[in-house]
Image 1 (cartoon, rainbow over the protein chains, first blue to last red):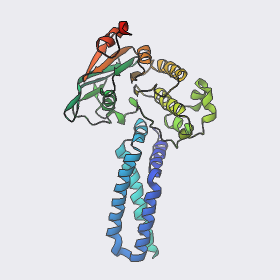
Image 2 (cartoon, each protein chain N blue to C red):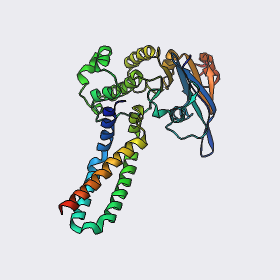
Image 3 (cartoon, chains in turn brown, orange):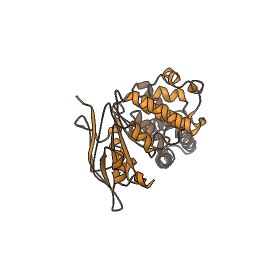
Length: 102
Length: 222
């Protein structure tokens, strides 16, 4: 399978919960802007817990769709590993950008 | 060398109830292997175990004598059609064909009515059309073995006949393991047949075996 196709599939999978997860990142960014570095640990755990909830929700609602990705060579581990890497990268990049701006 | 998918030693229990017991099943490239059985006898569990997506400690799944405990990670060797819809409904037909490496022209040549549906999301197709696309993609995509769980359910008879033609063409270079409750179609396409009963896979060579094993009513009672 081509890298382009794999990337597209991972991004498609991530898009299934990107709005909800992005909303959490924006909210965390707002709290970080308001309260500064003292909030960093709490915001990190907020992100971890909300992603765990999303993971549970997606596994309930879209579990049948995993067969689509399996048939294209992408396991659950690869899908979630890649999606969460993207998501946490965006989360930390947002906080780092805010830290430098404020 | 023959290309052979073999699974044996499969044991599965739920709450102390034995579902599958020391199952042995195999299929070869160039053949369609049919799997029949009553509801709840473990056909779908068996396919999932062979595919590797269902955890099962006691099993051996081999392709040409090489073990593949998680065969689902190798779509070049094995693909699986689950009995439910599995393609995200927001995907367009064009996108799905591209993901499976199937040229749109291949579908359009065989089934012209799908030419105008290339940009249609699967969720906007009828349930029969949606299932047809799913079966077609699994049948046509490049792989060596294919597991089909109820491919003919929800399809109109004419669609079933058309898919059986695709299946017969594709079996020249693939091996199929197929199960469906529409058993006449299975009898029609299968080169070899198993019946799952009481957790065991029984090899079936003629229709009277199905009657003897209690899957069909004996002909003289009908």
